[in-house]
Length: 154
Image (cartoon, rainbow, N blue to C red; front, side, top):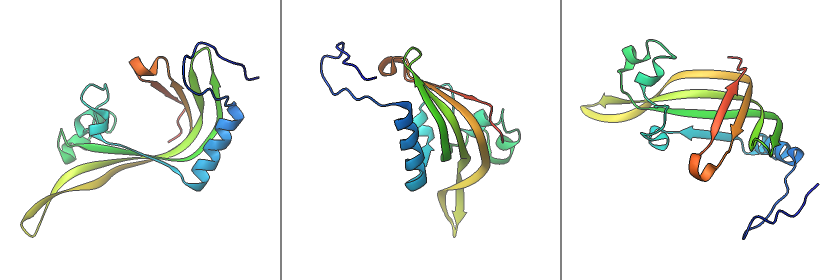
């Protein structure tokens, strides 16, 4: 049941049940979709994950040999379903099962009629089903968030 949380000095307090969050996710994915692009610029230099062919070569051997060791990569996550969404206050997490397409697009230089231009080439396309996602918020203003991905069927 909702209750008044008196530790907030200002702002709006909203009660959202797990049912509300899951219903919203299903409706949003079914009507407008959930399509997220993660660019190398968005990830940044300080993140432990680097979106380039050198970093991804450890998971996808031969990628750096074919395209070069430091080619920029963008990742696209296109969610097709999100189910069993739940949350816990104690762990400050949001978890559930998802199915999604994960694509990796490489930035490559291509010469056409003597002019070099950057273009994107889809190099990897994965269909992930029944992925268990656990998003831990912690103190998101200081630490960001942690996402645990378990039980993926590829």
